[in-house]
Image 1: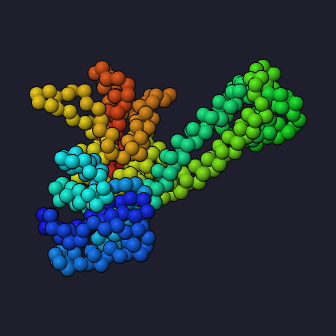
Image 2 (image 1 turned 135 degrees about the vertical axis):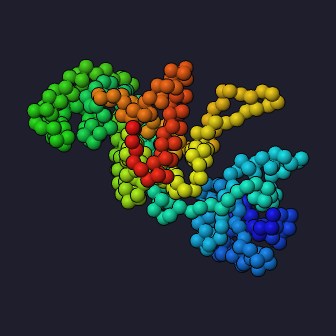
Image 3 (image 1 turned 180 degrees about the horizontal axis):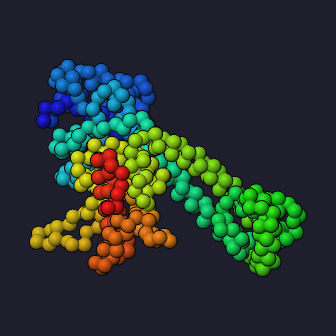
Length: 402
């Protein structure tokens, strides 16, 4: 293959690069460069040299290494160079074929170039700025939500020691009114000894009205009198509880801010309304689908989109044996896969007037009737949902269950 390539093995702080005019035709042996504006800019003359030698625009090829590779991808894409981001699995397969197990940055740089020349790979299509920003926000939201869930678990475990039964007083003990109350009165004794008018003033922040909150106050006092806290629970536990209350408030504020920006960006893109037309796909899920898929046109077929989501079946064959119990590959975007799973569960859930999404519910029930376990049936239905997403996005036609 006669294609000039700048191959880069990316690491933290510095990377190793090598230049090729074609397969097995090296122009510049592996050398290291720092991740500084000057270090990266020093690669541009080498790219220009490759273009002069070959009369072709060189490709920049590197492995996907998360945050370390992103600045390099953005930099070279902004200069107009095609950038190929390889799946590390491809270079790992080439490494396994080697007779000797050698792992050095210069060797890895050569392997990255070899993988590019031997595999059928295409340059990365950079998303537009809105989609790129939405992707960052959606992933931040996902990660913060996970951390928020962890803090809630720790908060509940301390609360169970200090104030058993408190969870019966609020449908959501992490709501602002509940957290404000616990920040002042983290134990049954403190609540019972407190000024009842002050407790009532805190409860009135929920805007339920005087009578409703007076009843709530009576209920709280009853719970406090019947509560049996751990006698070993000390002032240190109260300090811990108040710390968790502060953390929960911080996460709630951060999540609300991110959600606001997510929905503002997502709703400005044309496909948002199309995705929201699918019952079970809420505004945050639609935003995640938009962010992870980006441009539907980069997937020529629904099969490729399914593989990108990691919902395609893994294949295991050896000799005459062919497994018929293959799991999904899970090698695509975990964020996209999670969003599809959550939307599927919402879609098949039963409402007063039946399931939220009749199409998905029928498909789920079909898989269950075929003897599939519940989780397997949900994953199969998520695959069905992805095909629906692909169809309406491609055709620019809202969802219809007819």
